[in-house]
Image 1 (cartoon, rainbow, N blue to C red):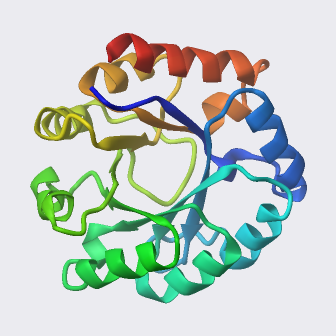
Image 2 (image 1 turned 60 degrees about the horizontal axis):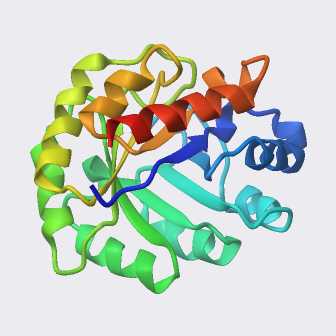
Length: 223
């Protein structure tokens, strides 16, 4: 399979008052990406961060900023995030059924990598047209918890979606987010996930570098 492991600590679990040093710490520990959860308080009940925080963080790091948009109107965020220095822009199919083609085009024209996310209750078939489009998304994010809050329990039944995607698209980046850590990584990696978002399991660990290394090794082993 032509996919590489990408370990993305979720900055939602970091110390927000020290975002720059937390970003440096994670990259020094071997993280590939930094996962940024952008929530608007509408699509999900929580309110987290927006373009100003991405812009501030970008001044302190060259890292890939993997932005996950849990928002009602993702189109409104494309230009601000592009200008702020976001690297990846992942929108939810649930909010974009009618305008995903326009959204993908806009994301690419602002220099970001487009991805699409699905909530646990959404069937995986809904994203097939976006992966097979002439102008496709470059990543699919399978939520393994209900989006909105950190620290939730991993839903193993979501691995069927990952398996279907991997069988159908051998070279697609497939990301999982929610409850990932040492006890759940093997299930996700063996199903075919290669982009791993991990929040509390990394930031809450006595030695985060060991957890990042373990996550990477599990993905490599499953390839």
